[in-house]
Length: 120
Image 1: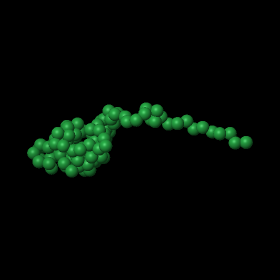
Image 2: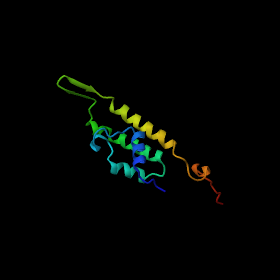
Image 3: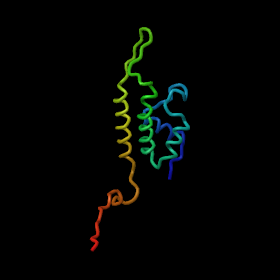
Image 4: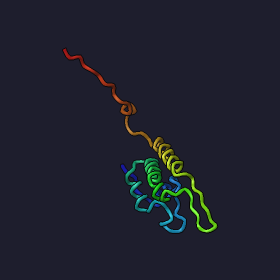
């Protein structure tokens, strides 16, 4: 069963993926439609959060155009390295993936052994 987007659930998802709308919807990495896709594609909020962090990792390069430093006149901005940012996003995705409750038997989580039958 997938999640049903509500204003409160959208806000919680944005908070957990460290995204805020500062002034307008253009100020965030995820539009409301993208947030809704993440929510309706998940069975638990932590699964949606993990997906959001993976998307942030995949967008790291394109969002900054590969820049780790930018300057305009006397103003200079140095960003965290793209690799470190990507690694942080992937670590957050892994953390939230672990928090998704398992459904069903724990026995199904293990690979069955390969059994060979002797043929005469």
